[in-house]
Image (cartoon, rainbow, N blue to C red; front, top):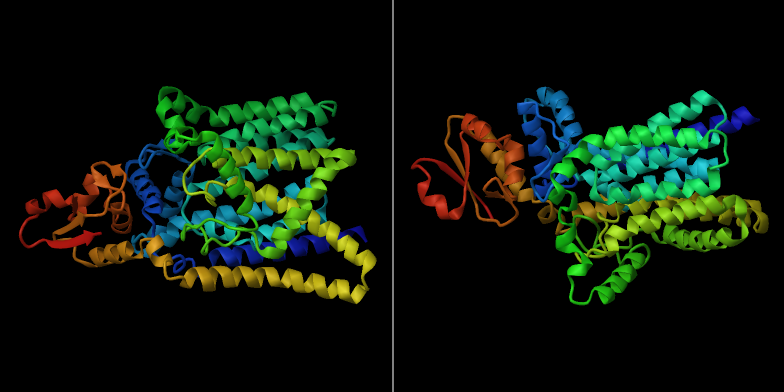
Length: 487
C-alpha cells in the first residue's frame, strides 16, 4: 500500500512538472514578443563575458546587477549559439528563466512536504505551476526568478538536514543547502533579507540531535559561497545599495503615510488589484486566480489560528509568515510602481503554501460533509480549471494584449534583425533617440539591438561595422552608411 501511494505521488509530481514546463516553454521563441532593454543588458553582459572570459560576480551597468544569472546565460549561449548560426535570439536568454521557474516548482513540492505533508507539497507545486505571476517571470530574462528558486531549495535542505537522523543525510543536505543559500546572494537584491528567516529554526530545533553542528556546516558553506560578492561589496559599498536609496519611501515627504499605503497596495495585489505594468501583468489583474486567492485568505486565517492553538504546526506557519514578512519589506519601503509583481517575487512561495494548506483542509471538509461523487466532481473541475485558466491568461490575454509588444520593445528586435541581415561590409549606424540609463555613453534602449547583433563592445562593433551614436552626433555619420533610429 505504501509503495502504491509513493508511486502515485511520484507520477502526480511528474505530471505537475510537465504542466509547469509546458506553460513556461511553449512558444518561448514568440511570447513574449521582443526583448526589453533590461533583459538585453543581461544578454550583452553575457556576450561580453564569453568574448573576454571575464565572468563577474557583479555587473555595474543598468544600476548594477548580481552576476550569477548572466553568467549562467553566458554558458548557455556558448552551447546553443553554434547550433543557431551564431545568431542570438531573445528566447536564448529566457531559457534560463524557464529552467529556474520549473525547478522552483519542484522545490516547492519538497518544501511543502517537509513543512506539512506530501499532499500539501503536491498542491503547492500545482498552484505555482499554474500561477500566471510565476509563469510570466519564468519566461522573462530577469535575474529575480532565481531568488525564489534559491530560497525554496535552501529552506528545504536545511529543514531536511535538521529533521533527519542519519549523519550522512544531515550533513550532505547541510552542504547542499549552504551552497544554494549562498548562491542566492548572487541573484537579486531582495534576497538579502533571507538570513533573518533562518533564525526562526533556533527556538524550535535547537534541541534536535546535532542541530548546532548542522547549522555550523550550513552557515560555513553559505559564508564561503557568498564570500566573493561580499568582498566585492566591501570594496564597492555604493553598489550594495544600488537603486534602493533612489526609490526608498524615506525619500518621500510623507514617509509614514506612504509606507502605510504601500502595505495596503501590496496586501491587495493578491486578490484585488495587481501590478499595472504590462510587462508584469494583465491590466492590473490580481496576482492570484480568484479560487486560489480565496484559498490563500483561508490559509492565512488557519495559519493565524494554528500559531495559537496547534503547537505541531506552529513552526511551519511561523516560518511561512516570517518569510512573507521579510519578502514584503523591500517592496513596501519602495515608492516605485506599487503593487510591484517583480519586486514581490519572493512572496510567491509563502503565499502559494498558504493556499495549498487551505486547499488540503477544504478538501477534507468536503470529503467529510459532502457526498463522495460531489467531492470528486468539484475537486476535478477545480484542478482542471487551473491549467486552463493559466493558459488562457498567458497565451490569449497577455500574448495578444495590444500593449505587450511595446512593453517588450518588439520594434527594437525588428531593427536588430534588419541590421543583422545586412552584409558585414555594409556600414551601419544606429541613432539612439530614446532616453534611458547611460551604458558606456549610449542610452539603455540600444541594448536590445546590441544583443541581437552581438555588437556591445567596441571590438564587436568594429568587426560587424555597426556603430551607435546620439542624435547630436548624427552629423558625423559617413555618407553611404545605412541609418537606423531607435525612438
